[in-house]
Length: 440
Image (cartoon, rainbow, N blue to C red; front, side, top):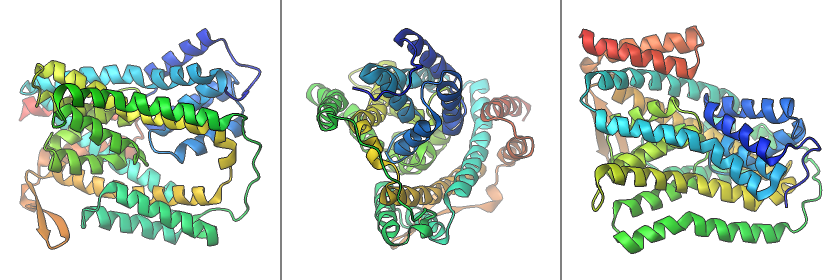
């Protein structure tokens, strides 16, 4: 049973229509999506008040998964219980997932067409600038103290030079933040005062148990089916297990995850190239829905290229659907299981410390991603080198791609100088990329 959020709750039919509309127009990444939900749910519809919205957002940020989709699910649960949470969470993602599937098909089948290749070339330049912008934005918000700055630096060194896995970095940061918050919360930018909490909802342990059981079954059922029908070594099983693991460590959003995905999808599994990873993020930037839908692109290409016993297109569609399922189902499971306990988490200093430390580490991971993207976009050949435990990337400075550099400079002017929106930057750069393809 959901908590009573407001006397201004609409009918479920109206609620459904509103979330379908939100799902179709929620461009702009997490910040823009959260702002849109605030305007609709708090200011226009007055479904919930400001304090509850902000507290719900803080709760969602403590959990792995896309913050905006978790927030949509939680608001839906507050207003209409389980069916409301399911409707809001699914509708927030579904339109963008269909668009991303169409773009993935176009990408796989349209390579070699000059206009398509030119558009992708221009989008790469836009993606580089967008990632730099995300690094600056998140860094300003997260690195409020010297301890947080050092955590970000350590995370960058760990993932860029030592190849430490992303889950290990997230876990270590969380433990450090949890410990520091206990004795010196101000060193993490936290207030020392502990906020009192309201009494939690009755029957919360029962809902936790039911939601966890049903959620785990729903989450893993497609993977088990793939194991039984196709065998444990099939690519769909690898996709399901990999993105399930990714879902539970997905703090920091798609920008942070891309570094981990690149490490695994490109280097370990060989599903795609580094350039294709950049292309995927560029396509995801043009769709509504969470930016983490870029995972669907990876799942599509992985299955498309290892299709047996299906056709490539059928395998790609199944791989995309499976990736989307295991990416977003865990996030909804966490909301339904944890929502009854939300009041207990208000002002929890140690959890806030863990979140602050994780966010700082994510800045270091995004810096790694920025360097990785810049090297692969701007230089013709980048080679990974190793010396003992150290890893670095070697490149020839004379191999600088002048066309890519010029397009990246134009994208930077649009984003930083003229303050144009993400979609506009991507579209303009795609057009310029097509023009450059035919002009040179």
